[in-house]
Image (cartoon, rainbow, N blue to C red):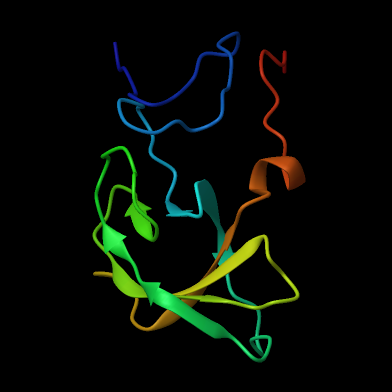
Length: 122
């Protein structure tokens, strides 16, 4: 019998990714008391002007308690920026093992935009 860890059975509820202790840690940046979730690589061109807000700090799966802490299962470094007309979005210029100096959008309203459906029968 083959068991695939992380695969949900058909009748298992699908829930939002949670922080520490979850099987899956969805990449997020903590800022002003809220989590901004990785949405996608940024559109080109970037909106202007972008205002730098600071360097992000990788904390792995730890519980965030300080602005600009990055929660995720891969190491990153980079700088976060805001565009005044999109307060729900952090633009983060990231470098990881697999990408370099790439802007990623982190959305504070991610779960409002893409709600998670729980206990949905397929």
